[in-house]
Length: 197
Image (cartoon, rainbow, N blue to C red):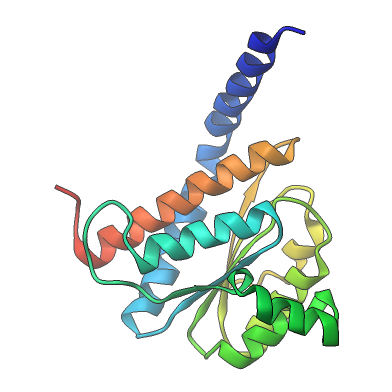
C-alpha cells in the first residue's frame, strides 16, 4: 500500500475543493456573518447544532465565540445544543432522537436569535426539525449544508442563508465547513471589534 499516494491524493482533493468553493461560498459567508453580527448587536445569541462530526464543528464555532478566535475580546453568546449529553439523552429517551434539537430550540430560542445548522451528510430529521423550530421561534437560520442534502435546502427561507458545499466525499465537506466557520468567526470579530493588528 502506498501511504504517500493516499495522503497526497487527500491533500490534492482538499486543495481542489477549496479552489472550487471560494466563489460559491464567499457571498453566503459574508451575508451569514452580517446576519450573526446583527443578532449579536441586538443582544441576541447564536445557537448551533449538528450530528456526529458536525457536532464537533458546532462546538468549535461556539467555543470560538464564547472564548476568543484570534484576539482577546469580550465573550459572545453562543450555545452548541449538542454539548449537553444529559439533556440530549433525556429528550431522546422520552421524545425520540428527532426532537433533540427542536425541543431545546423551543425552550431556549428567542426571536432574533440565529440558528447555525451544520449538515455534512443527508437526511437528518433532527436537523430538519431544528430549522422548523427556529422558524417557529422567529429565528433566522444559517445552514452549512452540502449538495446532497436537498431536504434541508427546501426549508431555507429567503431571509436565511445557506452555505452549500459541493464535494463528493463527506470529509471534504467537513473541511470546507470548518473553513467557513473560521471565516464567520473572523468576520464577526472584525465587524464588532475592528481589524486584527
